[in-house]
Image (tube, rainbow, N blue to C red):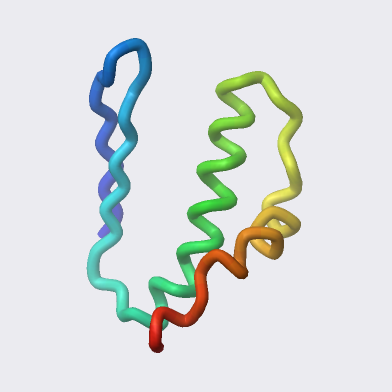
Length: 69
């Protein structure tokens, strides 16, 4: 189950993403993909050229070690 919530926050917007029913191992796999997706969303909103999603996943993967999985 994935829930996206947008809340006004000053001059911006707060995005809260809740992803339920993931095992720790599955969450580790999803984390870098979601990170890359959110980076692309930010680029799109800022009018910046989009980086290839797969390339960005590979770049950020080291930020998400196995969390003890």
